[in-house]
Length: 169
Image (cartoon, rainbow, N blue to C red; front, side, top):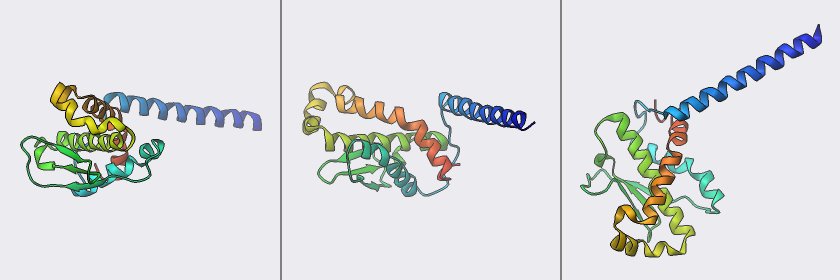
């Protein structure tokens, strides 16, 4: 009797774990869609920077980048990285006006700029960023390609974290 109960518990536990795993896979495959920002933009960006901590530590980077939210509407930039100050600046008013899309692009932009910080800290060739942009153009700059890939790769996991933290609902 006890062995049957143990078997039922193991089967139930295994089933719950499997369902959770399938749910997580489907959610990641479909992409996380935030509906609404539950905090100010400064908190959103701060939480994205904090979320990147494990990635920074894995890259042997001890400090977070400085960050700033500028409510100036830039005509040419969604965000930027200032290597001399080790600071990222995000321009929320420069992003899409539709709320869900705006949130996703702000998080993507923040991750993109965090990648530039990591490149600056770990890649000695980052000092040639401007030269690559002049010779190849912004979109063919290898640092831009890498930053976009990094942001795209980490976007859904970061959005899920922000939803879990109730920064997004």
